[in-house]
Image (cartoon, rainbow, N blue to C red):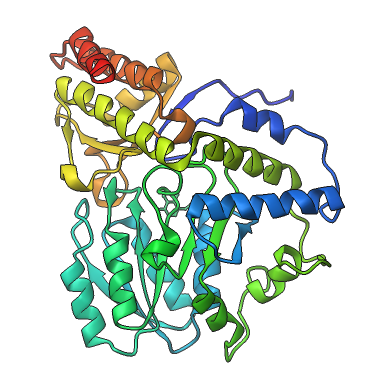
Amino acid sequence: MKSFHPPVRTLMGPGPSDVNPRILEALSRPTIGHLDPAFIQMMDEIKQLLQYAFKTENELTMPVSAPGSAGMETVFVNLIERGDKVIICQNGVFGGRMKENVQRCGAEAIMVEDPWSSTIDIDKAEQALTDNPDAKAIAFVHAETSTGTRSDVEALCGLAAKYDCLSIVDAVTSLGGIELLVDEWGIDAIYSGTQKCLSCVPGLSPVSFSERAARSIRERKSKVQSWFLDLNLVMGYWGNDAKRSYHHTAPVNSLYALHESLLILHEEGLQNAWDRHDLNHAALVVGLESLGLKFVVDKEFRLPQLNVVSFPTSVDDAAVRAALLNDYNLEIGSGLGTLAGSVWRIGLMGFASNKSNVLFCISALGNVLATQGIKVEVSKAVTAAQAVYSA
Ligand SMILES: *Cc1c(COP(=O)(O)O)cnc(C)c1O
């Protein structure tokens, strides 16, 4: 056996996304103790930078030492107790995982289902709240990565406030890519991931809780069933007390990487990052449509960071993705769940959302489609996308 040297890919799938070289360099800095005063100071900066990224003043804001799925689990196991009722608005794969989490907490999941690739229907959500006045929380996904659909978090949180229940938001794919205003929208509990629009290494999950949610955790009747994710214990390490105590060994180098990625986002500015995602998305739409591909989601609800397109039925899905990977070192995503085999998911997340990736993807995909017998004019498609940038 030899050292592992991964191929150099361009990552335009549903995550992980291309990691900025600045972040990879930060990752390789010397490891120090996770209770070293220098490290603790950096942890405080991470909390401040996360508050900036989430647009929140929430004290209880920190990264969980595990991927987005663990952030999801952290939110549910801490807020939900046996016998609680939680309304879940599902319009894709990840809403289904929320249901699993709620049921495994011994709580009841009230499902409000919308068709995949549709946004969450606000009226149906309100009806569920009217029918279940005892619901403890309403949970939903901001950016459904399985379908490329955006939902109206502000309106859904407005309903949560009106019916006096907690709002739980999955922002794994939205943080850093599209507008997300935790305090202004009244989000009570939110979790994200590092490997999507933050373009950091996978394996960490930023979370944030409002004061109301934090109180609900402090006032639990039962112990959180997960020792590792119990925030009452985790806060001994991540809390504001001068004395930090050992809970688990923090992933020291991954946290250097997160610090660097949040610093990059702060330097660019949230609004600029959101605008950049919009512009690159606009150019990709023009190019892909010129190749004859169809966007699945209605324009109004599309995610700029995750583009879902259907392709002609004569096209061999797996062969196209294999050719892109082998001949172009380009990764795009396949369809998930009910969309498997009929769509591609093309990510323009974080560092990967740039002009050269857009033009590269259009030309590579166009060339591969031509080998599948599809009539395409690749240079015309690239020129059309170019024109979006010069407009
Ligand atoms: C990727 C993703 C997750 C899970 O994150 P992992 O880091 O893979 O555990 C959860 N929700 C959404 C919407 C996602 O896109």
